[in-house]
Length: 542
Ligand code: AHR
Image 1 (cartoon, rainbow, N blue to C red):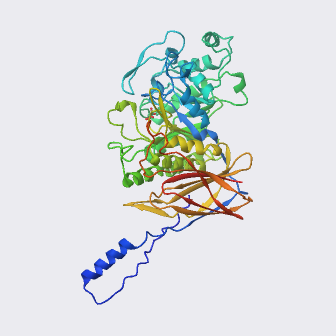
Image 2 (cartoon, protein in one colour):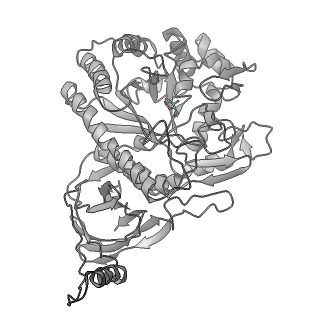
Image 3 (cartoon, rainbow, N blue to C red):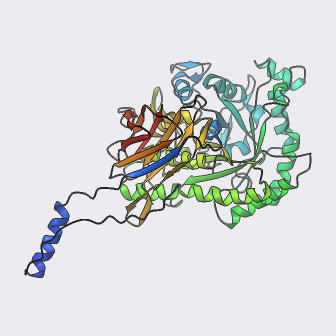
């Protein structure tokens, strides 16, 4: 993002200076201020040269995170075969249909903190153990949604598995046996057990997360201690699927930092320094980064019923993602200039105060237009770092934190964040195209932000896609795009906005925040369009 300008808007108010008293002069000034039209915001000039391309924007940047937490899995995904809610083998059909439409590339499961207390054997076979979920509300966990149900769910939505294995309370042997159970041929004892449980063919496990937040809920380990454990898991937790030996190898993702500053840079340094000198016997292909958008962990913002001040504060905080990625990328570049190890932002999103009357351990929050803008800004940051950031997982998919979908028994509603993910589908696996623009500024109180944001990409068919966000909640933005390297004839797409920054979709009004068609005026190599205040727009150029 180029945020060069600090444009000062000068109000051209003519005040007649006559020999009057000071009081009259002040009144005249005040009146002039009231009557003068709102200052016209400067046009945003965007230059896109479609002949210049950057890295691929991996589809895995649009991944989801689904933890056994509150109603994220139970009710949100799994209702059971006997449920009156329409389902396929216990998995709700409405949620599957909605997720198919956003082409979820991977789902991280079963946690989160839950993963470091998860014992996979309790979730297979006929007799499932009933355990507890001490991290999240202390509720019972009946393990009816286990390995086979998760893989069935992925099959139904057309997604890939990102398994987080238990490095906290588990052992390398337990994790190794889970992978053997899932991926070995049915000739082995574990493969035979899998087949007896209904799946003959080995499963594909695309990604393996080695622990979760091992610096905190995952065991409060030092980086050195975690490193010694991680090497063992990296070595012994194998994938035996014949189809994943040469091509489509499982990618191993180590626990990485949880923010910015010395504690976190030390973590990244320790892992990456060791990785640079790693021997044949262990390796990783990814380093995780967790970064939630929270202004104050002790006084979290509300997810609904807020105003412009909270809107701008949250967006200011979310833009920190760029600096945090830069901080860790610089360390990674030092030890891995070839960018072999991906930075995987496998937990991100807004974390607000739980909705009143909800179980605070269930992390239930509403999802507003602010979250749509926030999602677009983060996806743009990831795209700009696509050479290093090759995977990300928003927290979380259904009913938890910044969710795509909210459910209440048989009811389901798609959130504003869902719509952004849907609008951004064309960016999955597209090639990044550099964009130059002067973002201008938007100021609210003591918060100053860039006024607009933009990214562009070219898909496999050669179509150019442009995503534009107008952060300013008060002023529309006139955007003039100069296109080089493409002969545009038409440009159209969708825009997402609403009357208020805290507008939400509810079961009663499910389309209060929903995309609407938008078109741009095209003249030669120029496009002109107006972005509504607080909006996200995606257009294609043909
Ligand atoms: O997403 C909720 C929790 O946040 C996850 O379980 C944990 O990894 C993180 O602290």
